Image (tube, rainbow, N blue to C red; front, side, top):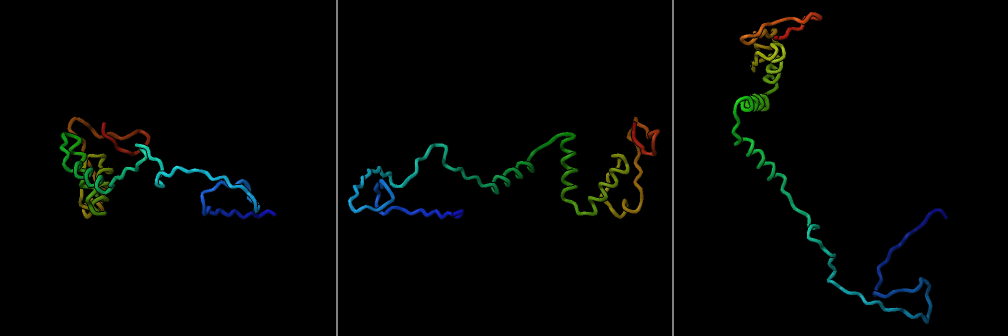
Length: 140
């Protein structure tokens, strides 16, 4: 038949059967087993290591807050924190003002920025020029 049934049963006694058929006068060979108390062999590296990921995350966040940065890294972290902790209107205002001013203006007031185009001024020593192929402005 195309269907098969597999049945696994545990032996009542730890004996070795020579066949699956019943015989009245069958000699059964008794196997000796060495019992180690039902323990599986263990190796030094097989013990699973427990890691408390919540504790590790809290530790990393604490280290990030206590980290002292200098110069541009400190400024970037400040802006990242302002943007990350801000509400949706503040994020929109920051994105719009930064993009429209080519990185020279960063505003957090959506009421002021949302209704008009943000015009930036070039930093000292630079001038505003237009590309020849379009009306995109850039600082050179």
